[in-house]
Amino acid sequence: MKTIALTLLLLAATQDDPRAIAELRAIGQPAVDALMQWRAAQTLDDAGERRFETAIDQICRQRDCAWSGLYWYTDFDAAKAAAQREHKPILTLRLLGNLDEELSCANSRFFRTILYSNQEISAYLRANFVLHWKSVRPVPVVKIDFGDGRTMTRTLTGNSIHYAVTADGSVIDALPGMYSPRDFLAQLKELRVLADRDPQTRQAYHAARARALPVKAAVADAWTAAPLAYSKMAVEAPVLNTTWFGKRQRVAPAASRRQAGSSGIDEHSKELIRRKRGTDAGLDDVLRSLTQTLAIDTQENETKFHATIHQWLETSPNLESLNRRVYDELFLTPDSDRWLGLNPRDAYTAIDGDGITTSSVVPADTTGRRPSGAPAQSARSHR
Image (tube, rainbow, N blue to C red; front, side, top):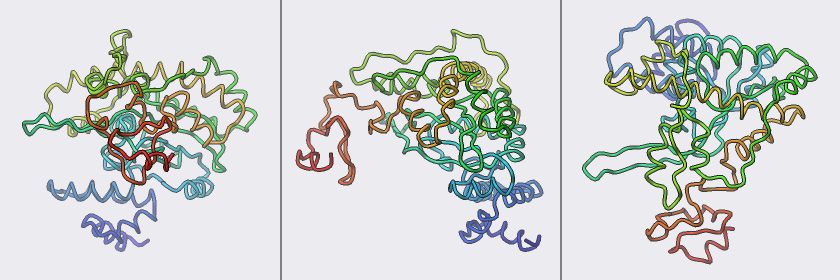
């Protein structure tokens, strides 16, 4: 595309022209690169900056793309075709919610603000992978109204995982949950080398790396699942601990049990964190705590989750069956539980209908539990 035509498209996109945004999205990563270069040459006021960020988020299909410059496919077949053309493996992210929305699950938000915004990581991803994401299910959102005009909005439960796959869709390896930037980059480099190996070599690699037994999840609930990802637990624990609905408190800070080293959070990511917080107050404490929880996440994900995935990959499962097993057995958020552990059968809330409402198209959960005020016939007919 000629430079003048591309510049006109870029300008139109920043004016919220849907046709220009669609055309730039069809171009892919080169359009994102052109937008980032265009932005670097401009002096924008706050309104212009917001328009630019809105436009590039839509083109990238990633929230905070102005900080990562990464283009993401949402059509897996299109990603595989791009991987064939570019001779690259695919890094496909599975998450709760959508990557281009502010309120995706906590881990995916950490990916955007700490990993993808890291300049060394984003450069490596652009050069070595085709990027794709897919939502596993919507993410639960809780809004707390303090009754005096103050509200707090959070997401609850859920975990995310990056899969490296070949252009034909075969799974190379997976990175479950959150890693420190330094460890994430090291893992990406190992994945890139592994992508060039033949399937038998990859199987031997997984056999050699397998150490831990698979996680046994007899009962999955939000209080059990939350501590599986320490960085997001720091966000979710205060809400879960105060909305326990008769469950014994199970979420306790574990960061103090280990000494964390440097996480590799770069200055670019720190600036994004500062802007999203809207203040410098307490930033050093936030970064110190974050560094500690990232170190714990990295260790736990490698010694527990990743070790189990190495075992599973010895039999070369397909991507979708592996992903189901990860969410069922490792992340403890199985599809069979529509309430993601937040609606235990034996909990009494003293609220009419347990405070639950469902639309007419939403079926009853697999336990048969329904709001006490809901028509029994309706609940039976949707089981």
